[in-house]
Length: 376
Image 1: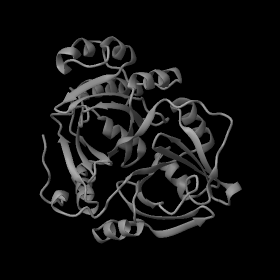
Image 2: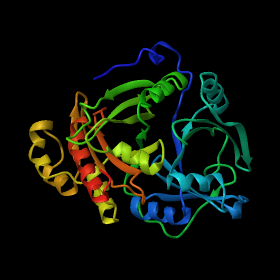
Image 3: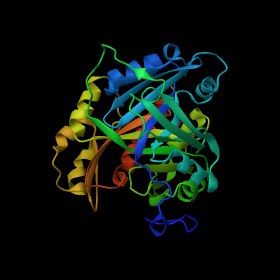
């Protein structure tokens, strides 16, 4: 089901006023960035990159930067009580605060989006050190989440000015994660179209696909989703809202525990999902599992694939096909105490879609977890 609301600017008919090169970094506000960094190294194979804190002149926060492939995570904690970072953690728990976008001109990105109705978060600022200059600016999006535009063509340091290289001896190996495939936001009741229009009108994104409660529902719960993408397709933001069902959906559960809209999950790509998931399981990452009868029906539904179905079943990996090819995907359980943020591991073999054929089995698996939490 493909459609584009009439009040969204059709980017195909207009100049791309906000060219984006890719995701620059994701900054998570967390209660203990030192321990969180250890977790992302040990469990997910992220590599240490940079550090900022008291030793680099920061007085209010500490940040560790980790990288795997093109994925950069910034983990930030406050150093004092009563800070905005601390208030964010107190309200939401650990979660994504900044989705940073790599652009050629951060000033232009800021003024173009502000002129189209974006709420300012950070006016353009030059940040300098001995390695060069970075220009950053920012706008608000759903909930307390923000987009920061990063212009770094004149910078040759490890990450950003006033960060130093972080070179610990502890370096677990990577697991094969390459880049951010897409990033899902959960918003409140009847707010999906508001944010779809925001990404269309303010940021020049196009709608790729939409799913209604007939596509994404089980006996008990339902949700609605629309996928927005920038001009070159490197940034894809599915936006979810709850839909009426007999019981509380996963989106409602997220909104209750995150206390508002926010980033629900990060989908990260790999070229070899079997090897990646094998390593993640060995390191203690827990994934949702679907019933074995999913795999009994799989061959007839998706046709011939390169992988052995028995191996996919042993790991819990799901498969779906579209007109372009097929994809393989698996979803972690929430990685925080609150049932909020989780990861999706995805490998695309031509497919451009998001696994519609897996929705029912996946959401029933989520509901089984909700039953255990007493939140369905």
